Length: 308
Image (cartoon, rainbow, N blue to C red):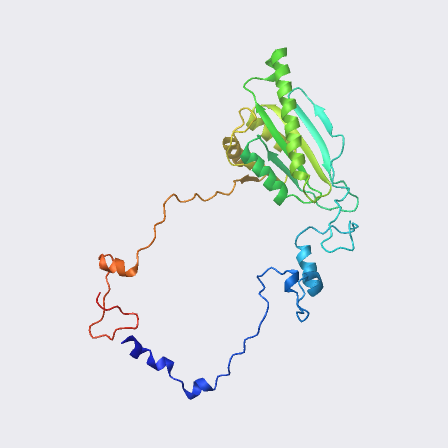
């Protein structure tokens, strides 16, 4: 019965005879690795993109790296040339340090250049507690918002329940050691993030403060002309008592300048459900899990199954 249904498909008609016969051309398999034994004098295909299409090669290579203008190439004659790092992209040494009873302020610059100058300068303050959320927020802000000529203020606070003046000498010594340790850690983290960026004339001020976290941050924000404050959403970092969740909420409601709360992107959880192989269609019909309705008097199709 099936052969009768498809018999007309195999009939040769005048219309079919008007179709030109296909011509099969032999070409090298593009997915096959070429060896010396496969070389052919008649093969005119050039495998080197730099020779075959110089313009496309130039565009492809430019998308792989940041082209630094006005800098000599290390190897000008070879394709895929690498460029030297600009000499200006370094931190000023030594950094300027100001110490007070309850704070350490370190200032420095990055990428000092008389060529890459800007007219406008934006100023950002980043609250930092040493936790993953605040590290992500600082990295995101420096990599996304920062432009050449901008100014960065990074503030870390060691929360205290009592005033520094009321401490004895031993407590003040331990506090100073903790402040000094946190200040060096903050300097190292900021250098790590900014050191990989192609930015010029960045002014940096790093604050390590001992006191009430919310009040200390708000005082720095009020004393400094800022464009925006950036902080993490929630986290308790290495700085004692500095909980970013409550701090960010406080800053949103009390800061005189706009506050940007940065949240890391959530990763989708992998499903723990095990996948099972689907049953064959005929088996599902036999088990009664699938019912097939056929119209009364309909002609069976070529995919019809007799005896089901």
